[in-house]
Amino acid sequence: MVSARAVEAQSGGLFLLVPFGARAVGQGEAVAADTTLGTEAMWWNAAALARLPKRELAVHHSQTVIATSDMLAMAVPSKVLGTVAASVYLVNYGDQDATDPNSGTPIGTITNRNYLLALSYATPIGKRLNVGLTYKFVMLRFQCSGICGSVPILSGSSSALDVGVQYALPSRVPVSIGAVIRNVGPALQVRDAAQADPLPRVIQVGARGRIPVRALDDAKASLEVSADILSASALGGTAAGLGISLGYLDQAFLRAGYKAQQGQGRGPSIGFGFQRGALGVDIARRFDALSSQLGDPPTYVSLRARF
Image (cartoon, rainbow, N blue to C red; front, side, top):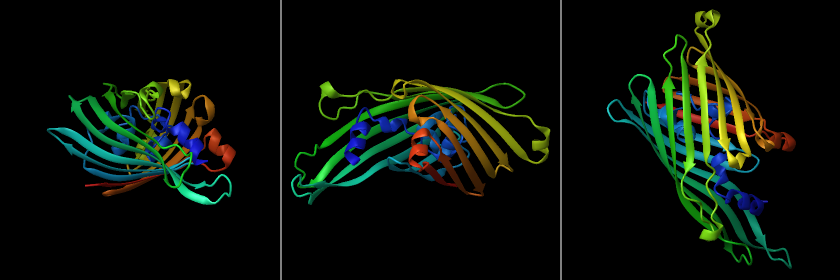
C-alpha cells in the first residue's frame, strides 16, 4: 500500500540507497572506480565526470515493485574549468484513494513523492587523479487532496554532500581505484526535530581493471572487471558488488553483475548498452530477492545524447 511505502521512504530518505542508472545496475553497482558512467556518476561517484569528453544530456528511468523513478541530467565539461552537471530526480510511489471509514466511498487522493535536486562539480588533477562532489537537496512529500480525515500530511527536506575520488594506477594494464562517501548532511526532519532521521550515509570503495586477452584485442573487443565494497548502516552493515563489462568496438556492451548484501537487495543483474555517434541507450534488469518473490524484476533504462 502507498501508506506503508511512505513510512519507509520518509525514514531518513532511504530512497537514496536504491540503485539507479542502467550502466551501474548492469554491473552489480560496482562502479566506484568506473570513469565511463556519464551523468549516472551524479548518483554514484561525481569524480567520474572529471574527464567527460563531451556534453551529455540524459534521461534515466527505473521501474521497480515499489516505485517509478526518473532523472533528467545535463553535464557540461570544460578543459579549463572541469565538469559541471545538474539533475532533477523524481520518485513516484503511486496514488491511492482515501476512503470513508464507514461507507468505503473515495473522498480524496493520497500521493507520495520524493524529489532530489543535485549539482555536481568534478575536475582532473594531473594525468591520473579525478575528484568530484555533489550537492543534493532532498524533499519528501506525502499528502492528501480532498477530504482526507486522519490521513497524515508528511513533508520534509534536507541537504547532503557526496565527495569522491578516482585514481588511475601507473600499471601496464589499465586499472583504476575509486572511493566515495555519500549523503553527508543533517538529519531529515519530517515531523519535528525530536523525530528527525539521519540520512543513509554510504562509504563505497572499489577497483576496476581491463583484462588483457589477445583474442579480444584482435577482435577489437574489451573485457573489464570491477569489484566494490560499501558500508552503510541502513543496509545492515557491509555489502559488496561484482561487475563485468564486455565491449565491442566501444559501441556495444554486455554487462553482468552481482550484489551481495543482507536482506532482500542481494542478487544478480544483467545489462546491455549501445552507443553510436552522439546517441546511446543502456538497459538493465536486477533480479534481487524481493523481485524474485514477486515475479517482477526491476528494469532500468538510460537514454543519452553527447554533443
